[in-house]
Image (cartoon, rainbow, N blue to C red):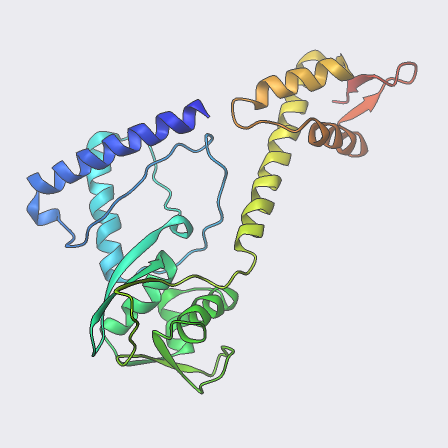
Length: 268
């Protein structure tokens, strides 16, 4: 938790430095307000972020920030988690402009319509290099849900690979800013599953490290040492540790002492 708090403090300082950098290098300014939160891997859960070919406007933002970050450090690599991003787009509709608050992926789809009136499903798939599952979710949120920013042909409630899409210039809403949610599919569930998987690997690694060093250890001591090691990354669940110990026994990393089942032996 302390690492997270420190990270967020440093991220705010980093953003201030980035804004100063843009002020001193007007040629580098991407023309888009950009806020980047740089966090340290290890302090935070891992998040799934599928690959995407970003539109040119977004590519420029990424390149500008990378250029700035390289002036601060040469020893760190940036990994962009687009699934956590939010974009504010200025939708220029016939009746009035409306600010659209969308995910980075939704924004990438909408920005394609800055240069063309109509795109087929295949066109969008090819340009963004997304999986069918991910693209269907994005297009559904923009053309079949409450806010129909895109018009779909044919006008059905599901997205298919033969559909085509165009920007809905007639769209309007009483609000001047609207947030367009993604369908409540299993993105959060996927994140939880990914975090659980990462934690299982971390628990396994901790148990094996401890047992490789100690060779023989009592049940309670092994659990305690495991909790101590893992607490730097997350608060480990005792039941999860015990479950991973049993799993490592079935995979022949550990064995119970035949005379004392509360003692564990490391199998090289």
